Length: 230
Length: 318
Image (tube, one colour):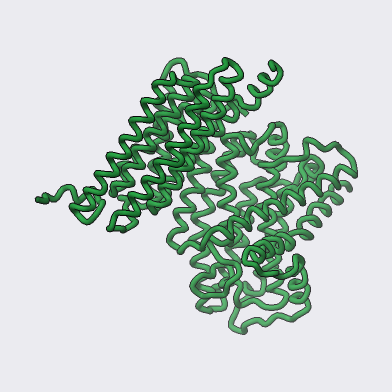
């Protein structure tokens, strides 16, 4: 048993978490490079799957080291919610709106990607001054996951349509979640549950608001909200 | 004396299996379309047939047109000498030159190819060379940055030394820096070898062709040399990728049998990469010309993030 735990600790150790955190950062870049709303949803699903994978690896490790089940349950919840339910709901919302012009970003894609790269540099320099994260791999994981938050924020303000902004918010949430998970190696279970219920409510409400926006303005472009409508 | 034998092995292997890679890619594409496709060795037959034919040269063209196939083929061979196919055994070649020279050699060949396409004053040639100039000026910075990222880690610019350094690592492919650089290199290989998102190698449609438009005027022996040079260049880039990201020589000892085994593993790796490229090509569509900057930006950013990850890791992690 202890032998197996040692092996799993080695294989499942920070090396794979490092790689996964880089892949999550990469999926945020992929999201930024997407042009179409259906590809946003696919990229978001990919990112959530990578987060679920991270949670699964951490869950297996904590199961063998401390005998805790809760992170594995969180992994299953992430797969159910963020990989299956929320993307499906977003696709349904998008299929139901009438007005479909796909291109909705403010600048062209190379500039957006370059700005994102600047955000990674920025988060590296801000986090370099924080005390107590001197370890190499934890530094890498922290910089990557904080960068995901920044990129999500930038995604939210660089897209004009409501669905793009919902996805931006979900990416911010993904970034916050992965940051918390990589720093604490497993939050208390009740906190995870609270986050998930918040998220589900958010997506429901935003879906409804997108429908309302579409009904009122024949468009899901949030720029239209500047006009008064009776 | 040994050096000469190693150079012969290096060049022989590259020249021998370069057309095979094209065959594998074409076969996979044909199978994906439920066709039987040309035989794997089709390109060898084509080259043999073209070599036997005399070439037609436009009488308004200058010496550049006639010299270009030999220059392009010469640059391909020079590039093949710089990138060892099997590191520990063949690194004793020690030809002066590093990856900066590799990029410059490619640029030299490309320059003459573009000049020759302009030389015959055909409209397609000019169109092809202007497109090629745009694509190469976009892709070349990413290639330099990604190679520099690897060079910073290995603290050398020499390719054999980089490949020796990589062998001390457990799995370079899952290391954060190498993963980023590897993805950038994959985009670069696809763009440099005129594969589908950037250029369609199998059509002669005037709207889409880039590389084909430049060699449209060539025939016979000259065309054979140009096509052979293109396939050798493709194999050199694939070799760079597989030997940096999937090193295998650390598990093999020394000796004659080891060289054979190493080359065999190398062949499998290269065919595997050809399959990866073919699958990528099947699953994507050709971009319009003005979407290529997006791809180039992505490659550049991946390479730059690779360097950045190296510094986030403290600069001495590897």
